Image (cartoon, rainbow, N blue to C red):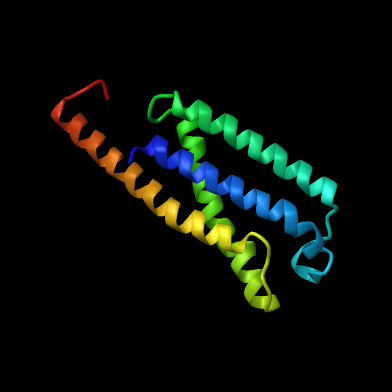
Length: 140
């Protein structure tokens, strides 16, 4: 599977994660105590919509960009940020509170599974391009 295909799968996973949070997190936040500041449904859903739209625009740009372009690097950073998002706050809050924090399941499934595939593929492509450069092949 290509890096672009993995990027789109990741994007779909993030959109599912954002949808789960948009539906459940505002009410959860009102009883989360020190783990999350209460947030209104409207505020949170607006923020999630903006982040989702930004991700769609960024992934579209990365799909039509060359490797090692700014959009490609930004998507890689987004993948890494979502991987960190699994640990803090999702897993930490769920364990500490003893109850499910909205977004934990989709964060774990999406971020851990797809991030590993994304980073493995990106690493393979980097290793191949480094080898190609050492052989003087291509326009690297």
